[in-house]
Image (cartoon, rainbow, N blue to C red; front, top):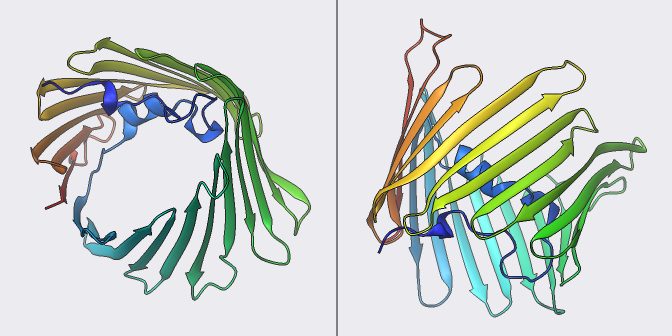
Length: 289
């Protein structure tokens, strides 16, 4: 069986309502940028029947190696994630799903950063998708995003507010349209300074072959940028992706699933304007025994 369109799933497909605002344009963005890696990356995931999962990951960036070890425990509606990185930072997230129909809540914090505590709430129904986050400090950062509409068409916006300075850190809005074989979006970002348009089209449903484009216009400078990409299933277990941008950079990715849920990914990028530097090449290995 060939790769299907699940490689670029319909955002929010578990709900009949609008997609969350942060998923507007996600399908095109995933095709253009997801899994491209120009360093050396390793990921090992182990899972047990008791609900406990362990993941070890590492990335070699030039001559520096950074990594982390994380554990995930799930019991009923509650999930606990704990991650320890190479800087001795411990990150913990406790998530409770469906305590109330459509509601997902999580609390996260980092040690030793005592100001990192944050509460996040996500609520989804057939008419609205709402995401809110608040920092657990005396002068918290507030983030709120909402979208309304139906499964295929959604309108949304997000705002960020810093109570310490009484100023907005962000305000963006956008619209997204999703069908099984294509998706389009238009987002006004960076406090109204940037307009982004994206489109993805599945032209071969049986193989999962698709093309995507992203256009960006910056009002303050008048700059226009674009990226074009494609994804093609060479065989049922191997996918080839390509990307070219307006500056002439060309990127290629080849990903092979050599066993269930285990992938080896080779990425390369050539920049004709940086002729004095070698092309970027990266290798990523993800193992799940």
